[in-house]
Image (cartoon, rainbow over all chains, first blue to last red; front, side, top):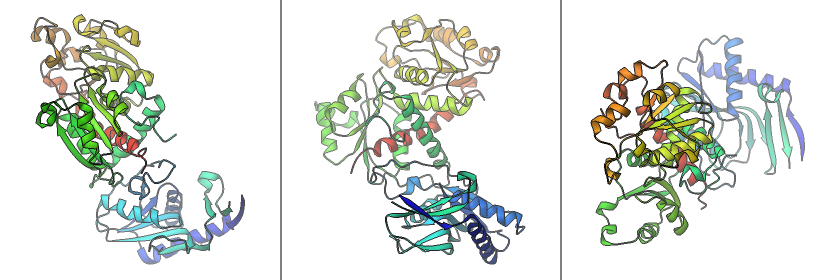
Length: 179
Length: 309
C-alpha cells in the first residue's frame, strides 16, 4: 500500500474558503438554507464550513444538520461487512428550504442517492445542492454531479481517496492511497 | 462488532451482553427514525415476515407489525383461531406451508415453552420469539432494560424488583436474564404461591414484603396476574392480592425515594397498580410501548441483515 498527498493542509484551507465564498454568492444570508453533513465523514467538512462562514464571513445564523443514510442504502444484505448506523440530527423541517448536502468524497454517487431519499423523511425541500471536497471523476454509477467541488481527481478503482481532518486525525490533508 | 451472535432471537439466555449493546445502539437510531415526520425506512423492502400468533396479543402483535412496516418489510399476519391449526395441522407443517410462500422471517407467539426453539431447529427461517408460554418474551425483556437505560442512564448497578405473578410470567424470566447480563441487581416480590420454587438458583433474591422491596429498589416492574394461566386459586381473592401486592399512590408517596414504575401491560387497574400510579410522572408504561417499536425494529433489522440473498 502506498499513498501520496493530493492536498496539503494549506491547500485544504484555501479550498474551504473558496467553497465558503461560492456558497455565500448563491445563498447570501443563509436564511432559507440548511447545511446537511452526510454521516459519517461529511460532518467534519460541514462543521468547518459553518465555522468559516460564521467567523470569517460573519454570516449570523446557519442551520446545520447531520444525516445518516445507513437505513436508506441500496446494499443492505449485499455486502459482507455489516452496515453500521450513525446519528441523524436534524432538528428542523426542511420543507421549502434550500438544502446543501455536504460530503468529503463523491465516488459512485450511491450515498448521495440514499441521502436524497433519506432527507424526504424531514419534508420536501425547495431544492437540494451537493458540495464535495473531492470529486472522483469517471467513477459514477449514477447520474449525480456536485454543484460545488473542492478538487476533481482522476483515480482508478484500486485507488482510494482518504480525507483527514484536524479534529479527528490531527491534520487537514487528503491522500490518494493505492492498494 | 456490529453483528448479532445469533440467527434467531429465541430468548435472552441465548444471546450475550454484546448483542444487547448492539440492539440498544441500533434501537437508539430507530427511535430517532420513528420520531421523524415520515417514520419509515426502506431497508427491508425485499424481506417478508410472517407473524404467527397462537395466543392472544394486542400490544406485542401491533408493535411487531408496526416495526416491520416502518422497516418496509412485507408482512403477513396469522392468528391460530382462524386457521387450519384448528383442523389438526402440526406446527411444523403450518410454518413450512407459510415458508413455501417465500417468507424470510417468522415472529411467533405460542403457549408452549420452547416452541420457538423447536421451530428454529426444524424450519429454514429466522425465528423471533414473541412469547412462548411461561418461558421467555425476549423483546419485552429488551425493551424494559432499554427503558431503564433511557430513564436512569444505565442499567448496570441499578436495583430492580419484579412484583407479582412470577410463576406464570415469561416477562419476568427474560427481564431477569437481561438485567443480570447488564449488571443490575434483581429481586422478586409476590405471594409465595406465585414465586417459582427454585427462582433463587437464577441469582435473584425473594422479598415477600412489598414495602421493603420498594424501599430497596430503583425500578419496580409490576406484572399482571395471569388469571388465564391459573388452574387453581393461588391467592384468596383479588382484593387481598391488591392490598398486599398492589401499588397505590399513598404507598408510592410514603417511600423515602422516587422510584420508576414499569408495567409490561395489559394493566389490571386497581389490582397490581392503581390508576393514579399508572398515570403518574413516575410511571414509564407508555415509554415502554414506544420503545417496544424501536427495539423490535432493531431486532428485526439486525436479524434480517444476517439473511443471505
